[in-house]
Amino acid sequence: IAGITQAPTSQILAAGRRMTLRCTQDMRHNAMYWYRQDLGLGLRLIHYSNTAGTTGKGEVPDGYSVSRANTDDFPLTLASAVPSQTSVYFCASSEQGFGGELFFGEGSRLTVL
Amino acid sequence: AQSVSQHNHHVILSEAASLELGCNYSYGGTVNLFWYVQYPGQHLQLLLKYFSGDPLVKGIKGFEAEFIKSKFSFNLRKPSVQWSDTAEYFCAVNAGANNLFFGTGTRLTVIP
Image (cartoon, rainbow over all chains, first blue to last red; front, top):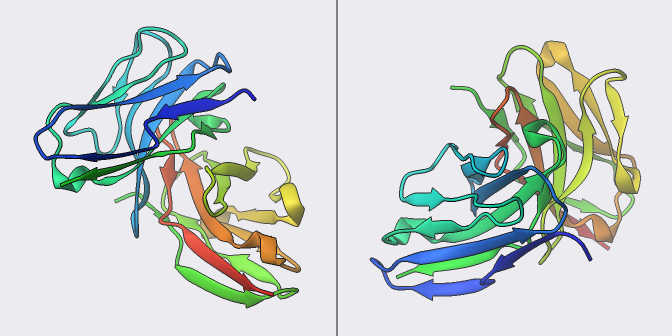
């Protein structure tokens, strides 16, 4: 089934460690996004990419970086994890950018100790 | 600050009851409006959307939402809920080229 694949699904990480969350889509959507979901705060945009080779900052980009080397992959890197980055991370893609329907992955639950 | 507000944090209903979940936003100008649903253990999926035209939009599973521009609202409704509607519901607003802001979500619990 076509869609968004995220890995890992769950990870426990020591503070200070580097972590990359992987995201791959097979729908050939131009736009991709990373959101974090926290209780009581809903979903907040971390970074986005409107097309391969370009990226942009969302609401909460600090401590995170992304790259978009090709259409299908959009990894999210935490250079030095901190406990406040404990969250569920969702990758999404869209054919029409922010104004269109977003297709979400299953999420990656990250715990930073 | 611009925002998307969902005032109901947790709603508990019996099956067959009617549902209305509130969503208000504070962005001026043209907006695109969405409701997403997250069933337990699943990823978010689109329930319905409004871009333009008829302010009453219908989505999947019998849901509908009404855009009232003067009230900056996009409330979600369903005449008769089912146990399978138990989920978390998120309102989202696109108000420019590079943003899609989500509300904090409303958890709906339907009691059989």
